[in-house]
Image (cartoon, rainbow, N blue to C red):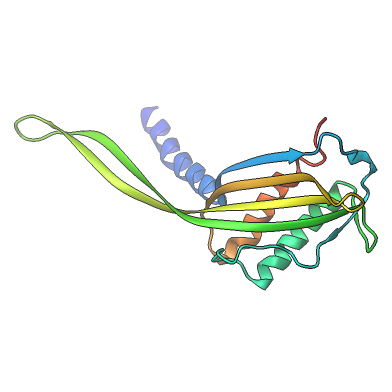
Length: 181
């Protein structure tokens, strides 16, 4: 019976770890800010601003990624019932920030030795890329920012995985539009 349980653990644990590691953004956090006076029920259409603001520091940013961001945002807004038009109620803008971060981690371990054990402090530096996607929604008639969504997380994917990473961040942000007032 114990052998059977151990065999299952040997098979299931690596499979679960593999599934978890396939996520492209770790620890994704979203924040939304909005104008409490805005009537979100009156907005039916949108248009991307001609000059989209993007960070030139983002290593993975390219014209292809810009299109991917726009397509992903378009798809999510369409799912919310908004329509892209030339005479919109809302302007959409987005930008991306990314930074190279490092974190110092110290662990205390006990190591057995032939004549007793010893306590050791092990310190290492963990380096990672952190990305932030910001989507702004502006009321066309008032020119005021009425909604802003941010998603921040540790980017773990490669350029080939960027579509999945972008879709995941956009979906997380736009899922909070319109705000629950």
